[in-house]
Image (cartoon, rainbow, N blue to C red):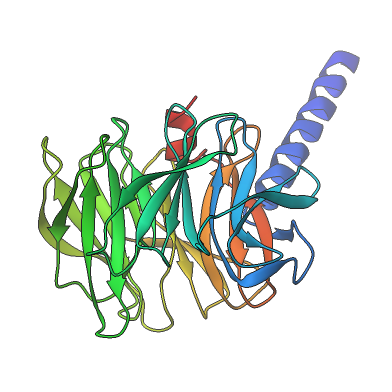
Length: 298
């Protein structure tokens, strides 16, 4: 009888712990102090070790490296008055940076701070956000803010550029699905995410609406390993989680009105880091599944 009492007590502790862990999911907490970044805070990305990098720490044109306890420092400064808007890591650890001022994509080799030019494309309005496939192909959103339009560029491993979608309404956040066969693009002012089919040659087709919001803007987007899409809802103080079927699962409050982008990282890839413009800081919350990009780099 005494053993059964012990088992029941143990199960009670286990269930209580499990419920507490479940409740801890989706609860945002600050990472960096208020006003530690500029109003250009954007483009977070984690390397395969889970270390976080974010553009425009302390001043425009920098890449900040954020430590485990929110302590941040300037990791590097972009040349020629460049300003970053997005960071992505390739599978080999190369850092790619969208320098929207100079219409180019920069790169930094693993364990280095030396910046080189990967793509210099004057026909771009700007590279705004990036996503990278498992074979190293980059897709870049290219909004034309003046005319409310934009395009998507496909950039090969050797730096060759081609336009693969055009006549879009301000494309912004961009993400390749875990299956590699679909590409999501956030249309900022339309408050909509669209999706394309991706063929074996990397071409896009069959554009259709994936999810539409009734108000506010959409910005950065990322997938977890199950295919759920996380959408930064600028002006709504939330990151929306959307299922692979385009159904909204939940909104996560991010402690500030203007989330601009997000990424997955941390020790197990289940921490979502969010850049928030109103308070110029990074916040984070934990989710059950790791990010798709984080998992593919392990």
